[in-house]
Image: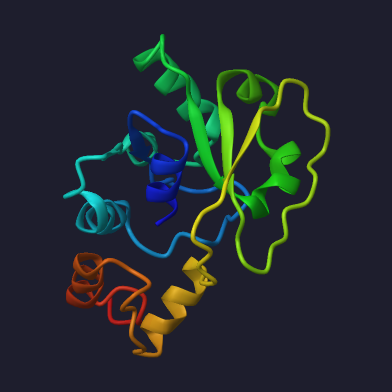
Amino acid sequence: MAAQDAYEQCGLDRLILVPAAQAPLKPTDVQSTPEDRMAMLKAAAGWDERFEISDFELRKGGVSYTIDSARHFRALYPQDELYWVIGGDQLPKLHLWKDIEELAKLVEFIFLERPGYPVKACVDIPGLRLRRCDGHLLAISSTELRERTRLNLALDYFVPHKAIVYIREKGLYCGRQ
């Protein structure tokens, strides 16, 4: 939903979904294999021709730093304007991101507000460009989705159906792996 909101409201030509191998500020967040996360993303959005899926960070492995991906996409698309879509809850943490000043020169950030995380002014980062996207506010986190799966509660209306089927077939997040 966030990808669709950003794509439509910001008039993007393409939107590339990039699953992280390991987010540096969430060291214990990875709870499924790279293959499973790629398969779930393909099930959820692979049919939608507006979106592309990149396995760059998964192939690279290790900690996924946005600056490395931004450099990668800058090399692939040297003439394009690059944007990075984030939740508004990340704005106060941007100063913690690796090489944030260089990253601010490479990309403009599109941020979507998340329920329960009012957008706060971020620290002064030279060259930082921000664009607000008024998305559909959905008050659920990936942590809550995994917990719903563990408790055998429905994921319907939160997760695309094909991804739900994949999660159930593989027994992901419920201790049957």
